Image (cartoon, rainbow, N blue to C red; front, side, top):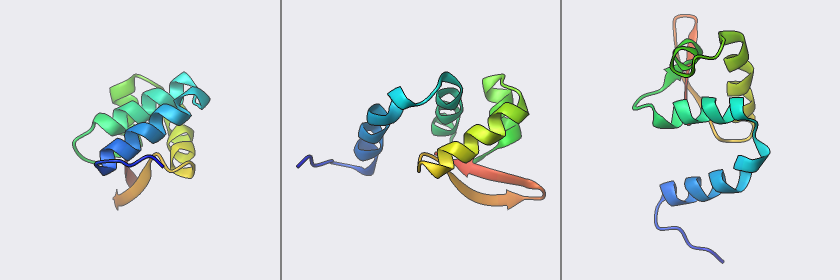
Length: 83
């Protein structure tokens, strides 16, 4: 069995394993979330990646479904997410 020194090691190993199954748009959204110092709204992700908002929203949902992102909280009408 493989042992991981930190939670980040486990996350990185999981990312390497499933990265090949993700399309470039999902990867861009994940990288934006993973590199953020605090949770991001889908609007902020769209700005950071240059992708249309209506492309970002479903990708965030997909990342949440596979456990690579999670809903953190809501500010007004905007949900915030983190990797």
